Length: 615
Image (cartoon, rainbow, N blue to C red):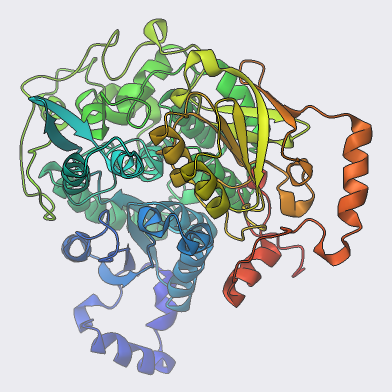
């Protein structure tokens, strides 16, 4: 009989009590000796990307049982960044990543679980589960709830595709009538699933394909489509096979720490840059590298950002394409195939199927195969019916998007730009780097110089924008919103979206030691490191200073002398214990957030917790 981790809770006379308790959960005599496989669900009625996951856990559990495992389901928390945004609730979003990872560790190790299927979808849930998988290093398979269909409204007899960002932007646009706003609000998020653009949720679920911990299509098959059901069934089968291979045959190659390597993290970052993904992915990939003790840093990301072409542009960078269009173009594999043609990927790495990336591309690339099942798979699309029911429709496009010149995915020759959709900037304002989503910036704004308007909270900046205090040419500076200074590193979709609604998104810049939603557009520069709370220069910027941004040269500088910087540092340090804290902001911080702040590091290390204080 194979020695599973769970054997310690089952075997021997002294485990009679544990067996009695297992029996009370439904385990029968014939089940003892099988692997115990956790189904780590993140169902919640708070999040549209998770509203449909309640029954999907049972779907996976039934498949695990059929294939010879003992499935046991438990839940993690899930915070909806869109609902938490714009108020103090956003302080809890990034810290929830660590809480999710910890809770999974607690459940898995306390019950000596053998392996797990992680059912995730939105915001910090997928990253938290990824950190847990690396920490535990037991066989793991990821399957997401899938993206929602894009919203659609009819204006002047034209069908316009919309999403969450449109609802936020038009809500602050005084020129949008109440009638049109109501249409947008009722139509922006029409189905269950993660928001339909290349925001953080969809970016991360695409990246799990490149990392090798999920199946092809995981990031792009719509939540409403019948094809997604098969991904859940496959996940149940694969986890049992991989679990038995590991414990019975000592097959270690598909463990998370063997799948997630420097090469796969680079592949994932290359994909993210090529598709102009959310800047939050940088935060999470750096955190994964830290958890797995892999040498992967902002320096690597900077190097990749200079050589990876921008091949795919989705909402919010364009109104033309959403996740359903990326799937029709061949999904993540379609982008990886184009990247592989120019030798940017390490294709000898494996995934949970036991296939190399090279083999996976060959099998699933819609341009290179004649397999009708694959063509059928990537032809799945939106039905256009409002619903919260998963797998409820089976619409298929009559043909796929194979146009690599003007289509959703482009070849290198016809790329939007020859360097990618993300860039790392450095300079005296961010000596350890910061991140900008270049996919969402007009070419004419790649070099920008402006006058600083300084705010010590997101709320203060939002009020200034909505009260017309921001002018063309300004650089909005929001500080003390980093991991430690916030605490919690708030996501700032509202200020950037309000700039857009005021017609200032192409005329102003916004920089912060906080972070941005994947829905952000315009000159939005986040992750300034070191942050203000850890004595970063952003703490010493004054309103009226000149800030120079040169994305082409990857630089961001505060235009003051070294002598003036030193003078300001001395003045700040005279504040004693209050130095490098907000001067005017009043914010009630809970004890749990204070604890998080004590250990949080700046964004350049993934905002991970520093363990130096406990060793």
